[in-house]
Image (cartoon, rainbow, N blue to C red; front, side):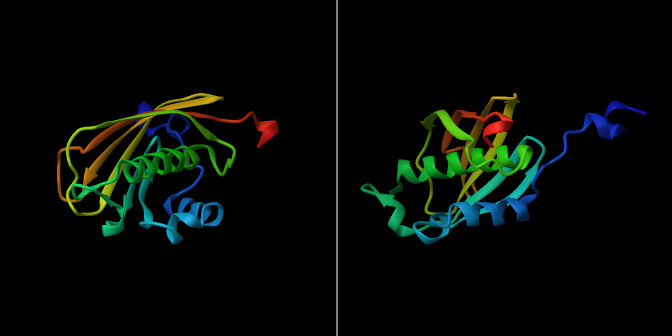
Length: 154
């Protein structure tokens, strides 16, 4: 049996996309009520894709999507990807996040492709590429770290 066929070597998700969506809606109802809705499109071990709907109200002077809106999607995306791996741990928090804006996004939905690079017991390190829907070149690259509380504090 090859390593890929050994289910013990394949990481398992703690939450699928539907469970993650339900949990985020429960603990962060403002995500859908205040600002552009964010949807979990896909999760797999160590990866996720989220979509933020385009709203004119999120534009800044110059007609481009605001940095805080882009940052929000990246942060929610990383948090969601992490929870898909470890389960509903509300006290997992951002400890560091850095965003590099690469190019002006188009007036379309924004996609976040999230990848966890290292998942430890207390920290998770990852990156997020943000794309305008329909475009292959990223509009931003984000790196971040999340702190995971010890089991007794969950």
